[in-house]
Every structure is written in C-alpha cells, then in structure tokens.
Length: 390
Image (cartoon, rainbow, N blue to C red):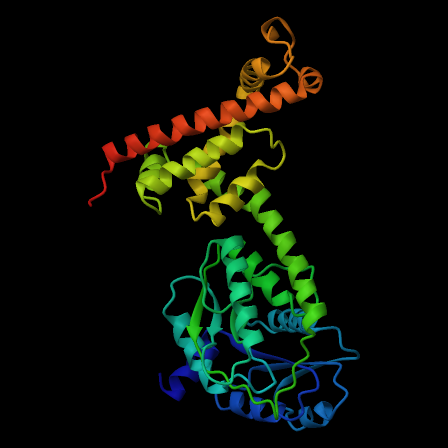
C-alpha cells in the first residue's frame, strides 16, 4: 500500500495509535515522530513518568495526551487509552510500545491485514524471536505464553506477548481484572472467548540494550502471570469448553455433529478411539467435581481429541448416576467385606459413605472395562464408516 492509501484507510476505518509510556525519554520522541508519518490520530498515555517525558510531549500539541499522576502499570495505561479512544469515536486502536523495539513503519502491516478481513479481528505483531539479539528469557516467556493461550482458547499463535497490536475497540471486554503486564494476556484470551478471531501479522523488532528500558520485573510479574493463567485455565475447563460444546451442539443436528465433530475431527481413528476411551474412563471414575479438569488436562498431555474426550466423559450424566453407583458397588463387593445385596437398599451417598472402599474398587473396575469396550467399539465403528488409507 502507498502512504496515501494507508493514511486514507486509517481515517476511514477510524484507527488511532495508542502509545502507553513510562520513563522512556530516550526513545519516545523517535516513536512519536515515526507514527506521525502516517497519522496524527495518536493518543499517548503518560503513566506517571518521572523523567523528561512531559517536556517531550509538550512538543506535540496536535496529539491527544493523557497524563496520569502516578504509575499504575501498563494495563491500567492501556485501559485508560481505550476509554479515551472510544470517547473520541475511534473503532480500532493500534498499540505500540514507546521503548523503541517496535518500528512505526510496520503500521501499514496492521492496516492492510485489517482491510483483508471481512469481520473484526484482533491482530498481534509476530516478532522473529529466533533472531540474534533476542534475550533467551524473552523467547522462553513467549513460548510459555503461546502454550497457555492455545490451551485457553484453542488458537495457535507464534507470538502472544508482543505489545504491537490492533484492537477492535467495540469487541474487547469492557471490564478487566489485571492492571499490569498480565493485562495483555487477559485481554486477548477474553476477547477470543467472545469469538473474535485473534491472528498474528509479521513485524520487525529491535532490542537495543543501550536505549531500551524494560519495566518487567521477572519474579513479581511472572508470578502475577502464572496466577492469571491458573484462573483462566480453570474458567476454560469449567465454563468455556462446556459452553462452547453446548452452543455448537445446539447449532447442529445429531447427524451433522457426528459427521463434523467425530468423523472429521482432528486425529487418526486410533487417536479418536483413545479419546473416547479416556472420556468414558474419567466419566465413570470416582473423580466427582474434577472430571472436566482431568479429561481436558489428560487430553492435552497425551495429544488426544479434547472435544471427543469431553463428550464421552458425560457418560455420568445425572440420569445414569444411580446405575453407575449400583454397578460400582456390585463389582466392588467381591474384593472387600462389603454388602453385595445393594439392589434392596436405597442408592444414595450415605450408602457410598458406608461402603466407600467397595465403591472405589468397583468404580475403577467399571470404568476400566467400559472404557476399553468404548474404545474398541469406537475404533471399529470409525474404521468402518471412515477408513484410513495406509
């Protein structure tokens, strides 16, 4: 795209450039000057800087400047900028760090990628983390973040930590729970949960130790990020995955569900059969309250089909629970001095409590047997209706 085309697109699509800054006096002016080559629709959030940042910003009366009295973290600065951008009528915000690692001449990359989409999208700059000069801790942190983002959203990206992004302002959440670096993880995960596509676009990156000032505190910030990911994973397992499954199932007929989510889902027939077997095993085992967590975690660990495993784990739906309890107690009776005459008793949790060991042994016998049967039957069925070529 030519410069004029980029400038017109920025204006027509109501795009602003948001620059959060804190004590980046060495690089801030260069970043602003580079952005001004494309647009004056710039919002700078001065997050309580104590250096010469205010004097630098006074040189730019044509841009919007928000000065916060004290430093409260990058996340808070971004949230403040997003609110101002929406107040000014912008539909998108491209965020660029003020520490000099991002090149303003990559702005056309985001604009062109947006123009190619037929729906709102959140774009994240994909840095080449393998190039010379990239700190090893940054590469590791990015891989770590990529894995958890995939686990929490099902979206595979090569870079989830870059601060060079394009946000659709009316599709991102309105309220957030994190104020610092971890905010940039929270916002992309929760936006993806709202069914907004999240994609990478290629950008350049510069790591200059002589100029770059990083405010990332390895221990404190990594701890905050780990706590956030723990919360997000829990929400994913107990709410997002079940919600998505129910919503998808409602949209499809049973025949279409079998065709798309079983026969045409990821993995070989053997992988699908193992996924179903795992789901049945967890669903019938005495892991009440932890079945979803276990089945999804084990599916990820063994690279199985999470959807099939989750569906199969619902074999222990409430209408089937009395039969599962009865069968477990009956199968466990020969191995302990328990009561095998359970058919003449009320099936309730008091009965399980009084015969706990009997129930646990029988439960594992039942789950192991039926999971093996389900796995073999599924494999034979899949090979018959959807044979794989050797």
